[in-house]
Image (cartoon, rainbow, N blue to C red):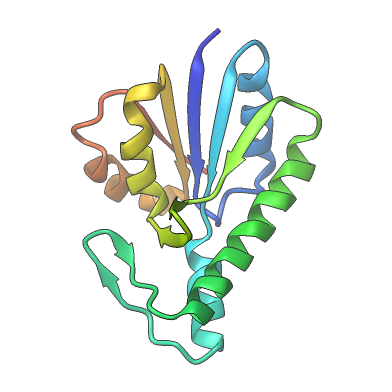
Length: 149
């Protein structure tokens, strides 16, 4: 039994190829999926009137209202994925860490790096046109396999 970490951007999270991959890996392994949602989060924040800002760790979320928007989108992503994956034993997490009662939003790719050492295999799913950037981001993490859909 292997520990397998999967991360999918929000743009491919519900793609049937990704769902089938998750279901296949879940047979006989421990699987954790990190839900992405960058495009959906940015769209929701802009729609709510917020300017999108980034720093070295990802999108900057300043207000409690912004945090609620982000967590709402990620929660929907998680629930939809849970339904798509079915009864498989898969743990689905969102890239929000808790420090006591404080929500700390983290870019999903940075969370992959944080979890890296605990897993035997790591897969990052993204859109085909983002493969190069993802491979560059994970260049020092040899277990990470970037998959484009």
